[in-house]
Length: 225
Image (cartoon, rainbow, N blue to C red):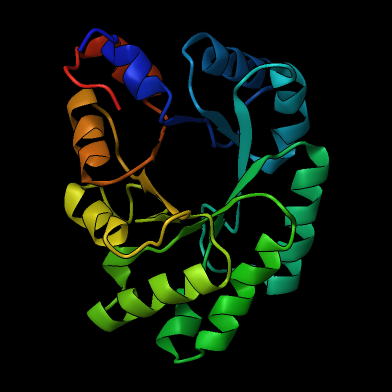
């Protein structure tokens, strides 16, 4: 293919910087990196959404943030709903959310779905972190079905590499079950162009990674996506 691999991969990457003690200058630099490398979005903590939104105004890079993360499943549904509304007010255009897998495991499927639906109500695309390795075979099926019913825009295999290193098997599992109009995001320990291409081949549309710059500057790809 004639298109350079950096361009092919970059447009699927959500450039992520979520860490303790990050400064304003680092966040501004992160936003500028997302623009200069052509990434799909800058994924940042809620506390920095307004700063990053200001820096990305007028560009094609979206502002993404996460809630009930990195410790997943500890917020109340009402707290998530209010936080989602605040993130949107500050400029977030996408939200990744942790889900209450404890409720799912307890058999409370209605409450699990309502938790997601409350965040979807903020009015921007919501990506749900399903934590697939922590679920049984049946729980995985219910998690997918309930997330779709609740209005999720994307399903994610996991919240981070601490739960699962993103792999084609998990992504293929999700890709085979989502209907038209619902996407798949791969997340967790994505560090190379080769791994990124394998995840896209398996059916991912988005890749969440803090190693986006290394990925697009280190590897030569042979395919366009």
